[in-house]
Amino acid sequence: MEDFEPKILVFACNWCSYAGADLAGTSRLQYAPNVRIVRVMCSGMVNPAMILYAFRKGFDGVVVAGCHPGDCHYNVGNYYAKKRIVLLKEMLDFIGFESDRLKLLWASAAEGKKFAEEMTNFTERIRKLGPQTKFRG
Amino acid sequence: MDTETEKIVRNRVAELLNEDVEAFVVFVRKETEPRERITVIKGPEEAEKVALSPLSVNNTARVLLEVVNNFDGKVGVVAKGCDSKAIKGLISEGKIEREKIHIIGISCPGIVDYRKLIAFSPEDVIFEDGKLIIKPGDKEIPLEEVIHDNCRYCRSPSPVIYDEIYGKAREPFDGTDDDEIEKLPADERWKYWIDVFEKCIRCYACRSACPMCYCTECLVDPVNLAISPMSTAEEKAAYPRFLGKTVTPADNLFYHLIRVFHHAGRCADCGECERACPMDIPLRKLERKLQKEIKEIFGYEDEDIPFLAKLDIIPEGR
Image 1 (cartoon, each protein chain N blue to C red):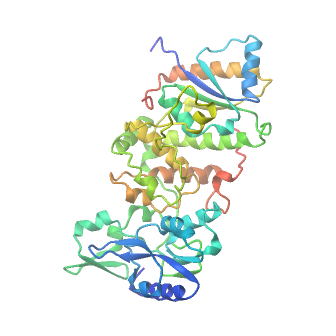
Image 2: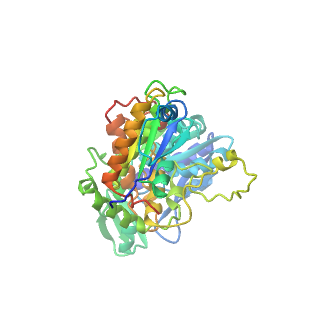
Image 3: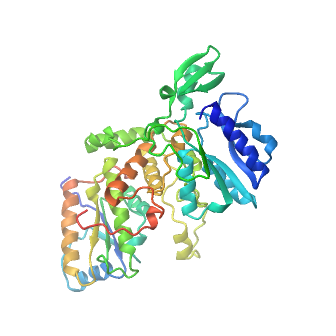
């Protein structure tokens, strides 16, 4: 358990969060190297099946990062994302899976610092939860 | 759904088939055993076959959706409470035109679970004011004893959409579904669901029977896409393959979670998935939980706009 390094998948939206992550990088902010980022065009395109698939493939935590409410490049994509994630978390709780392993994050293109901090915090949280073995196939 | 209602419906079906209705989706009694199936009749002379009883278990919306476009004129349908909910959903999603169908609504006293009835090895069953009389032997059993579990949670025994309505409905279930599973600690919940879905053979009968599962391409269908170096990213992206052929409990749970998720706010509560399931898995528990959360978080219940198309602003902190 001591040498457990969590694997975390981040779906970052092209317009805000990915740019935020980019800013974190260009500002040379240190954040957990456990994070793998997948760029998606909008957080609203993240299908719940994609999140479960990530868990199935062995990721310990999944973050869906999108624009702040009202800032979506496609106007309402992030509202749909939130709707889905809120429901998915409830259902994951119901089946007994730790819903803390899934996180919805609003991060704008200017919030490189926030992105880096959130990633570090989330990694620590997952480290405490331990490896995800329930869905891993 | 006693013999009285059956007679009225039979007459009305014959009358309507003489008028402008071209075909009717109805229940008929099987000849070999006391069960009913759904069929499509096209002439008034066939109307005498029409049956209606608590054995009319299946959801007519599914058959209606399949046949409605084969006819130019109107198609009639006999619909119980849950069937009408499915039809309403299909209309609001643009799959069926309201003008093209004529709905005979049936207020439903609840339907029989055939798996419970079979214990009495019936050759024939007659229904009389809330009781079943089993032949041979004239044994009387109350409907409540063999009622489908799903009907106990029925919130709309009376049709929500209809052109004419007959019959007497049961008391709608009101109140929260206090599921004992929710009270268990997380690890035991997981164990419960893994035990349950260990049985699943992924025959996809739940998907085939569901009136709301009408996609021509399903997320879990195997796709035979040969990926070569020449395959474009678009091609590969159009055929994501989330689930393989493995039937591990976690994969089954994955499939059922996604299936339930696709019914968010659309489920007609007919319990067709549970009836179709050859392994007796309590699939409706997941649907009911999702429905409850949708009601609690979004306050959405049986509205005219499909749930997924509605834009909700959820307050921060959830």
